[in-house]
Length: 337
Image (tube, rainbow, N blue to C red; front, side):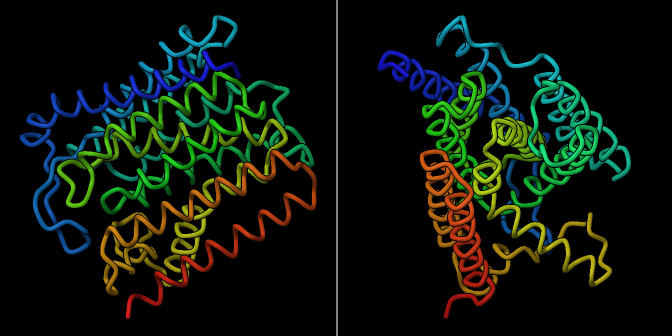
């Protein structure tokens, strides 16, 4: 990538951040009136706080991505219309749920519709799991997408948590794209999403003045999932698994434990590792800083698999990532002395 391209890329991220922050300033009074999240026994906050900041994040991401495509080069394909439509649908599902809780069945059905559309729009030649038949791969991607969208939503439970996840992943995807391992349209989307989250971060810093809400966490999960599938489809499965590894581990282990305990898994709870950490002596800032640093390390390991491709490199990086995430989960489970 040329120096001029790098300057324009930085401008895309800065535009997305500024637009996201500006929209939050405009929307926050209305959200305080109509979308106030009141604390309950499972909440991490103590004061009523407006939710719905994701409206600004998603609007800024879409606007910056579309403008960035034209600003960074006409040869770059625009984001698929089906992807943008699915993102808007997912945001609408989340917005309705933020204002008035939606029953599980219709919520999952609409999520499945959006995810199915994104999977359908993937190029036929894209193979994330080439060892299995094409049709089976698409089925696996569908259910993995449904789980990934919801786990991003589940993990958005304390201030700055989603920022600490999305920003390092977006930065790593941009770095990977600069090495030629990701299409430029996906790089622009990563730039736009990372910038929008940075614009949101100022208002979500502990103690948060606004929450992302389902209107943000659901489509952010879908966007991240799409980016990771594109990365895996370019033959970079190890990198695609490494980048979200902390979220995957915390959410999946928690789900398995709750299923084993015969709990109602779709109900709100406080049993994720990061939530347990805040109940065992860690401050919110203690938790998110550790999550951020681990994600930076996971991003570096993902880049290593691009710079030094090969089975041994992938295996070594993945083992290192698993050990790193296991250490963080154990730290959170143990608590602060």
